[in-house]
Amino acid sequence: MFLPKYPDNPTPPPAHTHAPADPAPVRRMLPQISISPGAVAAVLVGGVVLTALLAAVAVTAISVAVAAVVLRSMLRDQHRR
Image (cartoon, rainbow, N blue to C red; front, side, top):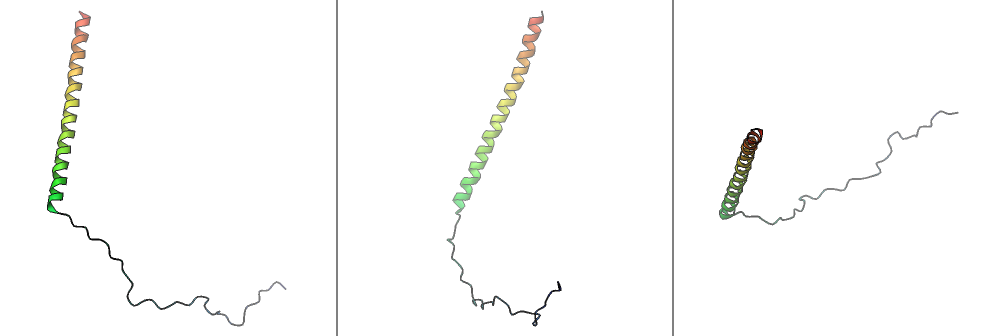
């Protein structure tokens, strides 16, 4: 009663048939990008300059912090006397 009924042909025909592929797929041409040596030099010089500026800001911040600590300790000693 509840037994499954199998089809007579166990392998049904494929529902989708593959179309033959094109022998050579079409490739889109991308624009060529050329990098001149001047552009590379400008980027390198800019990187060096920015790195030097960042280092200068860091050294200045550290020196200001050290000066603040020294002044604070000097003022604290003077208030205790």
